[in-house]
Amino acid sequence: QESPHLYTREEVRAHSSPETRIWVTLGCEVFDVTEFVDLHPGGPSKLMLAAGGPLEPFWALYAVHNQPHVRELLAQYKVGELSPEDKEPFTLKTSDPYSDDPVRHPALKVNSQRPFNAEPPPELLTENYITPNPIFFTRNHLPVPNLDPETYRLHVVGPPEGQSLSLSLNDLYQFPKHEITVTLQCAGNRRSEMTRFKEVKGLEWNTGAISTARWAGARLCDVLAKAGHQLCETEAHVCFEGLDSDPTGTAYGASIPLARAMDPEAEVLLAYEMNGQPLPRDHGFPVRVVVPGVVGARHVKWLGKVSVEPEESYSHWQRRDYKGFSPSVDWDTVDFDSAPSIQELPVQSAITEPKDGETVQSGEVTIKGYAWSGGGRAVVRVDVSLDGGLTWRVAELDGEEQRPGKAWAWRLWQLQASVPAGKKELNIVCKAVDDSYNVQPDTVAPIWNLRGVLSNAWHRVHVCVAP
Ligand code: HEM
Ligand code: MTE
Ligand code: MO
Figure 1 (cartoon, rainbow, N blue to C red):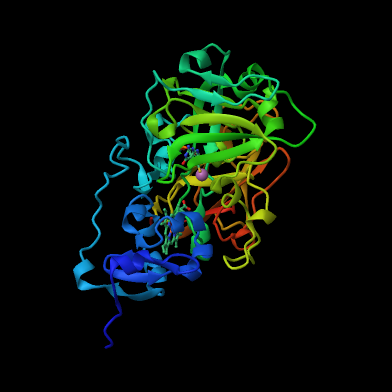
Figure 2 (cartoon, rainbow, N blue to C red; figure 1 turned 30 degrees about the horizontal axis):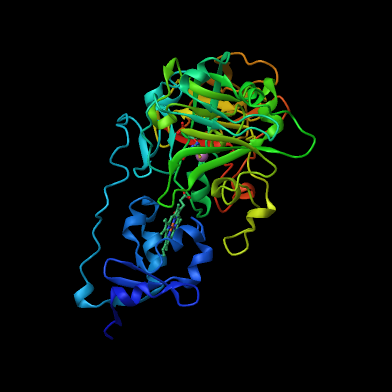
């Protein structure tokens, strides 16, 4: 076996630009990742932060890298090892940026600890029409900021002829308080079913990246009007920035069209209450955006800044993520500028009871689940099959009746069915229909996409019947 090339940390440091090639270290191994920079799923600029040095301090922030496939990918680029005098593995001297994250409910199924991403188990998810705060799904990209409600200020950038505002919490309370029930769903909900079909990049969400709460706060249109903003003829977007940020100081950001933000009927909120309580830290304390009917990614938490811009947010999460593509597009051919950012989500439903692989008693079976659609479209029907989709029955819709065009919240549903005698197994399937008669696709294959978003095929659960 050939002995590896040895390099000093000094030599590694000299390789930190495309001209000199880009090297990084992990443990005592040295990698030339020049060819990978533009392919990095987290964006080239993030990878470049580690150029010429150790990956550990950055990967401590993004635990998404603690996966075998990431290590295997890196291994392909190995060029040598650190020389013995420099072999001391890099130790994290900076404090753990996640050490101040809040304590979480033990029922949550954790998909990633740092940043924290977790979903309620299906059997709890549909126990309540309103999801209790402690088990509301959590999708964080970064450490949770710890903000002081006394000194908190929301910066609202005014138009040239208007005025910029710096709003304290108390200032926000002076606007009329508006309260609505809204379901929030991550674009990656049910991604694990896409992964099972063909590998995708992203967190493994099951059916629980969706939850419902009563949100209360000021209407965004009232706050924008106070700053002097009006609807304009030309295309414009309202950009939001969170107070959570990565080591470069880049904040989480997203945007929505100005027309939605200014429409009082769209009920976009700057929310400070969730189910009658101040927002929990994981869900954006003290203020977050709630955009009814729109993908979770635009509901910016720990809101620091609101501005009206001619273009969509330049944030990574607006432009280089949360977009849908054809199943034929892969990471070599993807052109993120060619697809619109996800805003309103398609019709969705899932079975939460029984669970896949469970054994049910013969006789009667109770099937439960949720259904929801984006853009305020109401769910008008949920069809359930016990035989893989050959025959169907209509489920009973529970939960709040929704206002026309403002069906911001899910419907829970259930079906009591008798198990046909002699059946040894059931292939339970559900699919929802919204008031535009949109339906869910029957399989994952035609909607598979490299990022694993918009996963809304018929939900299927296989159970055995006890003899
Ligand atoms: C995502 C590899 C350096 C930040 C990823 C993924 C891979 C990867 C394979 C996708 C993982 C998955 O979703 O399963 C690498 C390699 C690196 C590197 C090989 C070094 C050579 C960095 C650095 C940073 C970073 C230095 C931060 C400063 C991120 C972020 C994501 C990501 C933010 C996206 C996570 C998400 O989609 O939510 N990286 N990475 N990476 N990486 Fe890296
Ligand atoms: N806002 C900030 N500031 N930082 C984030 O990481 N994640 C977004 C959105 N708002 C995020 C954010 C995503 S992708 C989703 S799905 C929702 O928040 C999740 O909200 P929740 O954690 O309250 O369920
Ligand atoms: Mo999300």
